[in-house]
Length: 311
Image 1 (cartoon, rainbow, N blue to C red):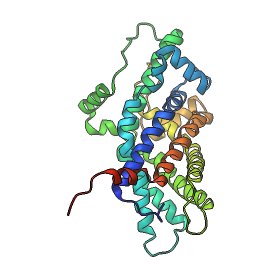
Image 2 (tube, helix red, strand yellow; image 1 turned 90 degrees about the horizontal axis):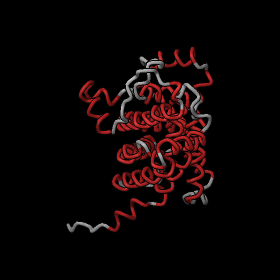
Image 3 (tube, rainbow, N blue to C red; image 1 turned 90 degrees about the vertical axis):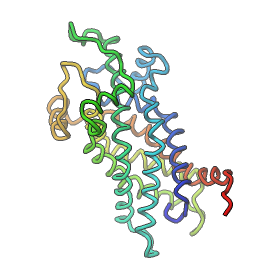
Image 4 (cartoon, rainbow, N blue to C red; image 1 turned 45 degrees about the vertical axis):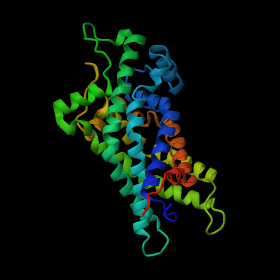
């Protein structure tokens, strides 16, 4: 990626289109991942069981609860991630030497750090909306778990959640779980970008030629799924911290350490692997599509169609 000089607007377009296409394709699996990670009462036994029960409870479009937030914010999020990694790789290779593995990891670290500005509020709102559906489904499909006399709240909208968080906690409310998000996204990028670059390098046509788009797709899928599974325990922690207020039988979490302690005590170490399969299925095509858009030069093609300003 560092060898290919692409303008910043083109990078933003590539990342944005890739994010929108990818999120639209895999969002139902992401919803299943969030609900599997959040559940404690065994409502869902697997990804397919979660999707079937979601359709039964909320209809087909129930699988896209919270998608609007992701589709709105995924463009800047993916654009920042890809463009930042590209920037750091180019900066770290200014001496003309091939990037070492350490420098590749350093560039990934920079990209992961930059993206949390957008990722944290996006994930916060998405998870709360997705978890609201889990609580609704629990009331419908497992009425015996509902506390007698407990008030039944209507599912909030993204705007309602945003207004309430800003009113009660200010801008910091949208950044709940920032520490856990950093602990997830920085290691993810440290693993993903160097792994993708080296896998993609194996498929290059000759010393100078670029890798075919299908090689970039496969490399993106393999690197994305590997990194996703590696950081899944932190993703479980982040999801629990950012999720909607639970019922009275579910304790809130006061930070990362408290969340780890309560999960270990109440559910055991296996809980940190919840949703790992779903997360791999989400991330693999998401990053595969992103890299194909990036390397096919979709952004450059779109910019070339725009009228050029006369000097």
